[in-house]
Length: 153
Image 1 (tube, rainbow, N blue to C red):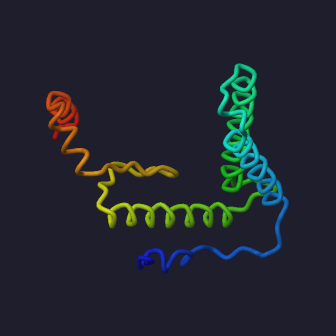
Image 2: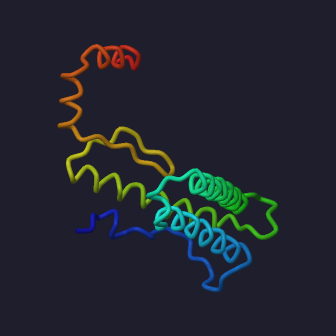
């Protein structure tokens, strides 16, 4: 079932031309390559053997994925740069609007399922099952007291 927020997702998002521009074509290729590298590691039967050769190859894939991630972060930042030759502030705003709505929908879904949202960041949502928290609190009350004291609660 969609929440009211999910139903209006996209409202207020600037509409951009349908034709793919230079920037979007570059980003699409980077995203596809990053997904391919992820799939190579996950889908390979070699991953089960954990041989040293496979570990070296998997590490190489991870380094390549990480490099692509940072290229994508730079591409996103470039869309908001005021003197960008290929960027456009409307594209930056549209990306942020979609990301914000997606994060809020995910937060609502977690809360509907009984999870407590601990923290939400641009691309991360930290949740905790309250029943599990109660069990953790019983096991280590000293740690919980220390955390509350440090947090000023």
